[in-house]
Length: 312
Image 1 (cartoon, rainbow, N blue to C red):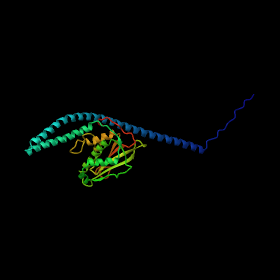
Image 2: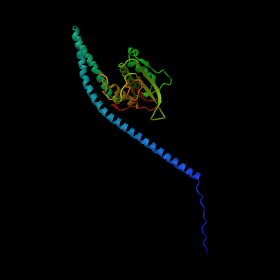
Image 3: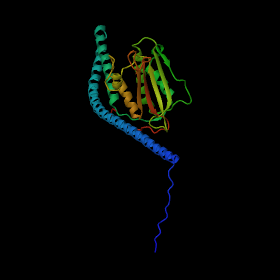
Image 4: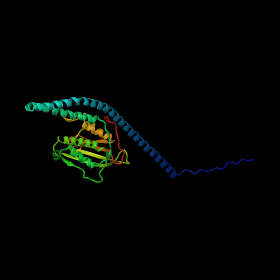
């Protein structure tokens, strides 16, 4: 009995065209893997940066919370004797009405007490609990109202004010109108004070726009900006300008911008600062001045109903 060998099946060889296709497919997969690796690396870097920023904000909130509690306690203790001093100064003014020189001294005491009481008020405003009651508000109306409250007509006459034209499609931030009004008034007054240090042109530009949210492409944000042609600020000042009690001026408590930061943070928004000086050696050259932008949730976006009331 003979055993037959199994038939031999010939396998067709891979020609050059098929080999080229295989190599192209391999190169394509390799390229996609490299791209995916780069994207993952960028995402990890972004997440680490966000985590570091979140940790920094948490530490800042804790430090300012302790500072706010201490400042509030001191402010309350100071306000009581100030009230007594003001009362006695007014009584002296009345008793010394026939002696103008001495009455003038009593008047100066009362005026000094009023100034100190304003400082105490700033401290308490910074330390108090913030309750945000958001509602849709016309951004242009906010800017117009804040301008009228921040600058007297004579001050506006010495400054070129550029305002947005009322528009039916104006941004409608979802915000607490009273708190944002307070923030805008502080920013406008700061801009006017900065421009008092320079010669013309003194131009104050207020604007409102609707921009895409860089963190959420599916929604928009309302952007309110206050721009001046003042002397500008260096990076070291920009880094510290929202810290409580920091100021570059000879007067003031240095709490105005810290309060602005608290208000915007309580709304779940953020602040951007762009500033240029006349320093010819600066890398970022251009016209001098500072622009501060408030990024706020747009109408229809969930806003923060209430935030803890300690400084953040």
